[in-house]
Length: 251
Image (cartoon, helix red, strand yellow):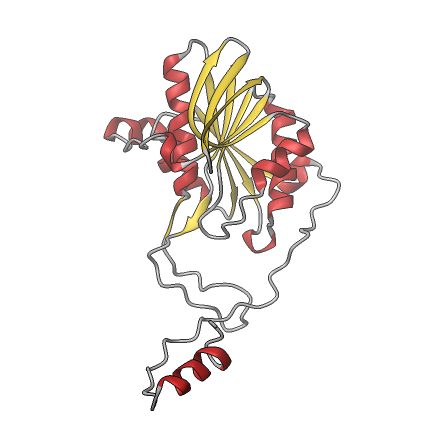
């Protein structure tokens, strides 16, 4: 069995982002991390490999050359067997193009299970998993909080508004991981050393032979949010209601 898992690099949610002079992206000197939901998917893939015989795990990262470091440190050092890096301009990627890239990688690797984070904390789109499952025609289970494998069947518990829902999927299938799926392990020193020697295949967009490399969504302009304004004093309740209605528009 093969499990393909995402290792997406995202901007650190705690970092202060600065929009560049052209207003179309952020400045380069910013801290990055592995997407937290991808860390849950990575841990989930490793746990399934540890609990089942003959399972190979592969981590995928897409973007600038620096993404390779996050594949090694965030996935291979934790226990993923090998990695695939696809060089791409991160400014030109959207959910649809990412899904189409994964389709081509899946055709090459032929995994039984694809595991993604339920969403990325930079764009918060929550789209790639669902788009990919539709493109592949595969069964899917999103927001997974528990996963079990029994032969060619995968049982997934997922959280819904009314409680827990249990789904049984036949492989090949796609699963997106929720934070409640697990507690991602830390990479050990031995794991970090081993990660340096694990295979990491490097691909370019041309290698995937996509029919169309253009994204459907483009960033037109980025602006820094306005700073917090000082409070104002009002003379009476009537003026307060008027300001809440016309200026704050909360009434």
